[in-house]
Length: 128
View (cartoon, rainbow, N blue to C red):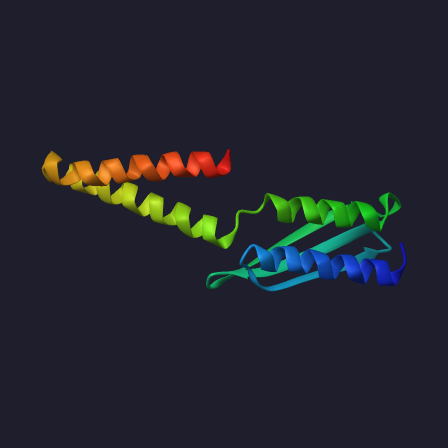
């Protein structure tokens, strides 16, 4: 794998991050001669926060290995839309619990509980 191949792979991986809805995706691969490691430094923004991940492989495993491990990490990330949906569902769940805690009548809560059931069902179908 030559420098052009590595740059092409880095560009492809940054596009994978962008396609999941993350902004400012950046991937750098470095060689640690003293540690005999290849390191992939992944950074991106999710909402207002910056996220960072370092992936290390043995240098003898080659650039293909660090690129594959980086791709596996990116593929395992939830998209920004999935993160936002999960946060919304959690917020509605807390709201229902809060209503029960303060004694809001069941007739008022039933539509919310039904909505949570539908959202949970949809999430299970989408992720399955």
